[in-house]
Length: 282
Length: 313
Image 1 (cartoon, chains in turn red, orange):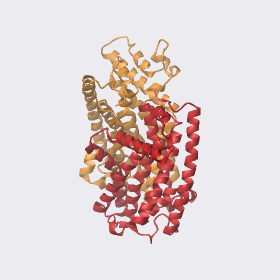
Image 2 (cartoon, one colour; image 1 turned 30 degrees about the horizontal axis):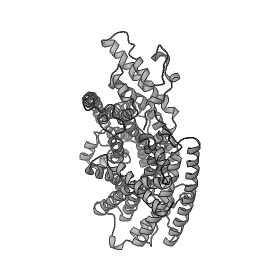
Image 3 (cartoon, helix red, strand yellow; image 1 turned 180 degrees about the vertical axis):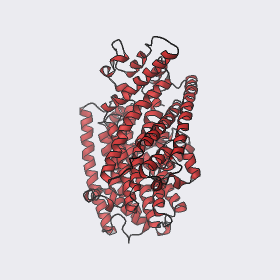
Image 4 (cartoon, chains in turn cyan, purple; image 1 turned 30 degrees about the vertical axis):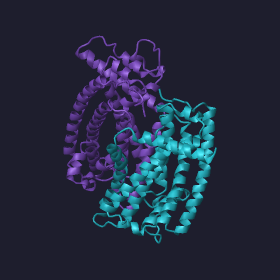
């Protein structure tokens, strides 16, 4: 399919996804909804730290917690957007079969449909960082931010999120509607393994190699270095920034390749078993 | 998300609920069967109420276990977040009892998730799958249906929460003070009564909502984790915030549980346990009463606005 058509599919699906995500309420409640969760998550971590540290808080620890939490919203929302897009279209709106037979690439449609959640995540991340910088003592200095590193890390991170998301969406074609928690289970596992809110050094020794095989471990490390300086390590103290980026590229490419295989297998299985128009509820 | 009632099969409906063969597979038929009570009036209505409770609790206990997704939602997810927050405390060098606080908070996640998704939003799912109008015309009280949902949900979630606590305690070697088990049982009973009363209250509100139900439930997770002190003693939020947060019964239930399991000094409780137990008892009575009133009001409103059978909103 020509690139122009792919882009049109992507944009149309993104608009549809955004409409579904946002048109259930008024703007005010939508903003509260988008912001309440990530800010509350950040506050949970901050209070955990305050309780333990008493008055002796360190800005770098606060920064570690708030930045990790703010950017994790991209992963959780991205996976959720893609997986729930499949389940919503199939089970609630009963539209998946029509989308599937439409003259647009299904893969591209899913990416666009799920990308609306990334827009919500962007707003949530910005607001969480703003709250962290203004009220929680997180040392964010926009003039000292390493913008090239941040933008490069974000671009690679999006690819990694899309890769895992498309695999989860493909698998969701094969599971019943009761499995809404599937994407959250995947996101929760990644959250635990990639050191989103703690350094991976505290994980058991046998888990650390798994953590180092995940692109999100390097992604969060690169983002933290973009915010707080490339001279210090956070979760991966043994790697310099160039190595972090190299591992981020390698693991992202590997995950994208694997994810495409999983999606192709899942789609084939769903077609073979007649699950594209499955209504697994009542 | 979890409208389990429709997945129960004909064979699964116990014989005592019915004296004639079922023509279609639905627990709703089981509910209609409860009308076979010999007399109206006080004892008959009570029996009808009780049989409805048991009839609605039955699919929660039995049918739910036929859909293995609950393992993800009610055990894996609480375990994963529990582990993650334990590692946060470990990375911060927190005292050992904080690991125990997180483990107990992890169990509370299972209950809160159950109340939100399987109590609060349940009537929304039922409407979406076309069952709510059948519930309404069933010759029994909707309050009894909700009580059945609560009883069944409480039973299964307790088993799952115990699993979460057991696994996490084994992995992180958490020790508990077991000298106050009777008090703990009392706190659990009144705490859960109040919590599921809140769930019933929410479910009446959700009678009017469409897709908002889903999003409101999602929004009520992390903010509640924060305000109710799922991962740290709530008194650190200050008395005013903690007092407001106590409207969610988990706040006081968690605080009292931690005091009983880890000692008053280590847990740094908000109030003495007996005061928290009394407050929970009061909440239990008030929330159940409010739920009954709200259910009647919302049902009438939903009838007037023709929302009881409006699917796919």
